[in-house]
Each structure stands twice: as C-alpha cells, then as structure tokens.
Image 1 (spheres, rainbow, N blue to C red):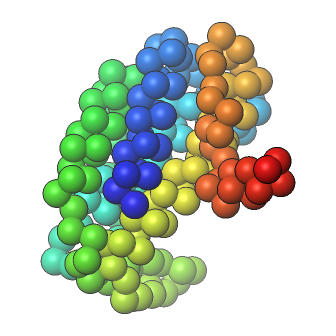
Image 2 (cartoon, helix red, strand yellow):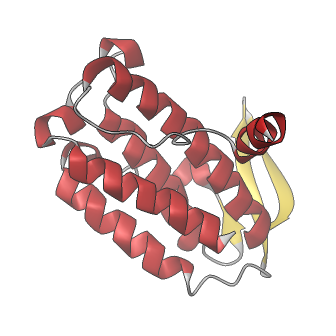
Length: 163
C-alpha cells in the first residue's frame, strides 16, 4: 500500500509540473468554483493527518487545511515529496482509533494505519478523478495518463475485458 500511495502522489507531482501556476489555483466552474489546488490540498491534508496521528488517534475532521498548499504549486510539490518520504517511516501494523463526527455526535472506531492508508488511497483516486475533469475541460495542454483518477478495480476490470 505504501507503493500505491507513492505512485499516486508521484502522479500528482508529474501533473503539477505540467500545470501552469495560475491554472493550479484558478477557480473552475465545472468544479463548482473550486480549483485543482483545492483538491490537491485536500488530498495532501488527509495524508498528512494520517502521518501526523497522535496518541493512536486519527481524526480527519481536525486536519490542518493549509491554504498555501492550494494556491502555491511549489508548496504543494514540496508537501507531496515530504509525504512520499514520510510514508517510508509509517508503521502500517499500528492500531489506531478513528474519530469521526457524524451530525452532532462522534464515532470512535478501532482501525489501523493499514486500513487508513487504504482509505487515503481510495480518497486520493476519487479526487484525482475530479481533478481530471477539471483539467480535461480547461487545460488541454496538460497530458493526463490514461489511468489517472481511475480506481484500481476499474483498471483490473478493463484489463480482463480486453484480454
């Protein structure tokens, strides 16, 4: 799972290196007024939240939401690289408690770093699909890999159908 996470984050790095600085932070109507940068920041915030868990607790509701990451592509690229490096030190066997607010109450769920890493992978793919829509409809100069933002199960299904 660390490998899959690194690969997804590396795809973000490649994409950002092709995307213009102003286009990164440009609000796009097809994304309900959000930018590519806001989606990248959101992905990175959740990965950082998992990597920075304290006292065995993961709480995505209390992530940092660093606005500089969504408007400054260079800061986003630095964060991507930092997360890739920090993934190496992550002990996926560690047990954690996930705290999530639902309506007016909090849920506490026994989980593990491994399970939360899988959540982050699926969450990342979901947002990459949204980013893909924004890029395809606004920035045709950016080359998007064929499977960018496509779920792993969908890729496998397509390969089975083709072969």
